[in-house]
Every structure is written in C-alpha cells, then in structure tokens.
Length: 149
Image 1 (tube, one colour):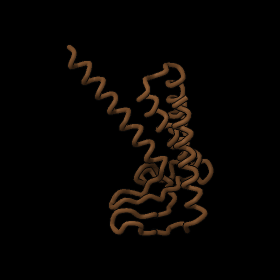
Image 2: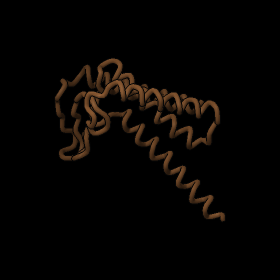
Image 3: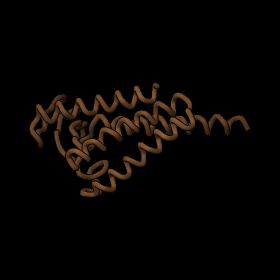
Image 4: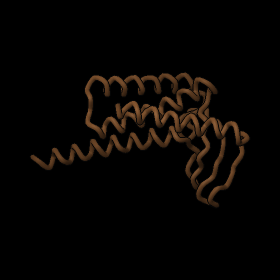
C-alpha cells in the first residue's frame, strides 16, 4: 500500500503544481523568489533531462512506460524491502507525471529554477530522489555484504 500512496502522492503534487503554474503564470515568465537562488521559470521541455534530445517524444513515452511497467511489476511480484518500495514509488509517480505531460502537451512542464541548474519540476525531483535512494540502498547492501566476508 505504501508504494501506491507514495506514487499517487507524487503524481498528485506534480499535477497540481503544473496546473497551478499553467493557470497562473505566462509561458516564458521568470519570477525571482530568492535572488540568485530560486526562480519560477515556466517553460515546456520537449527533450529529456536538461533539454537534451529535443523532439524525441515517442522515445520518451516508450521509455517512461517501460520504467513504470517494470517498477510496478517488480513491486507487485517480489514485494521488495521498504526502501526499495519508496524508491520505486518515487520513480513511478514522477515518471507518470512527466508521461501525462508528454501525452497532453507533447512536452514536459518545467518551472523550478535553482541557480545555474536547468529548470525542472516535482516529477523530476521525485525521479532523481528515487534513483538516489535506490543507489544508496544498493551501496549499503553491497558494502554490508562485502564487510561480512
């Protein structure tokens, strides 16, 4: 159940934040919240992370669908430990959020800008955090097992 609650919560936060931005901010607008640190910069990204591979919508749709299906299948079939469920749920919720954007708008709605870093959204944060959590779990597990030899 935690898997679905987290994935659904991320999807809800992502959709609500993007809907709010689209309804209240003009496309291309850059609002300074904390000078030099945090801006709201509303744009549509037709590429992957950091704007790479522009115009490859079908590739991104297919990859997102495969990631979602694989993570849901793995969670359902193997009932992984709690931290893996958290990681997979973050990745699934974020992937669903960006997948919905690509289906609806043929791009991803991005709006969070921090310093020099490329503009991103709630879904991107969830995917990155899920990936980091997953990698930390693997490193912890590998280090723990190798220390027992």
